[in-house]
Length: 228
Image (cartoon, rainbow, N blue to C red; front, side):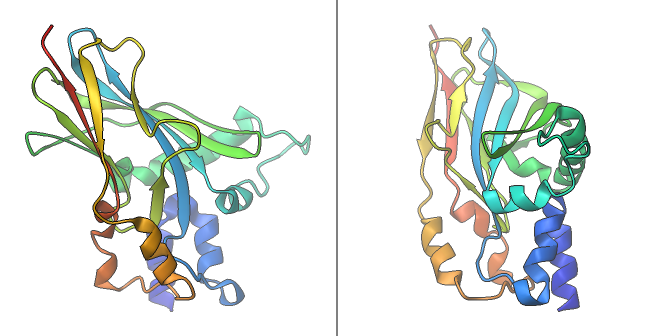
């Protein structure tokens, strides 16, 4: 049990409070994955068809938000200000570095590397805890006739990234050339079935079954541009 607690805390260091809840005696986790994020991503592409990075907007599930916000309203005014939430945002993004920000991009099967996050902000409005941040590419790539494949997922599927409500999961920046587009290709496996199959089961964090599971349930997005 000790090993499981340590592994879950490491794997979800971004979500430390809920990790503690998942492994504590009376609140032993009974579902897999443990955290759900409604994710939408803006593709940053310039007039020359060059993709420079992505802009994420992640809405955390209500259970995580409730745990994460405990003690964050320092002045007790009932409002979670930017100043109060900044430490949590920095902790989250620092932890996400170990997991490549759950953002994977390829061009011609070559993995594209991202720089550290910029313009990060954590807000709590209308009962939603939202993390936004930009990931610039280390080397911008031209998508003219050379598609870029993007995936957003936790490879070990402890965190599930879901399509947002009333918003596209991926979209191009409004200033993108009209000749640029993207195609969403759904995963061959439905993650709903896996979640339901794990109900009532304690998470086995040493189980090899978890490794690589996230990519099987994640849609991919193919961004490309045509010549004018």
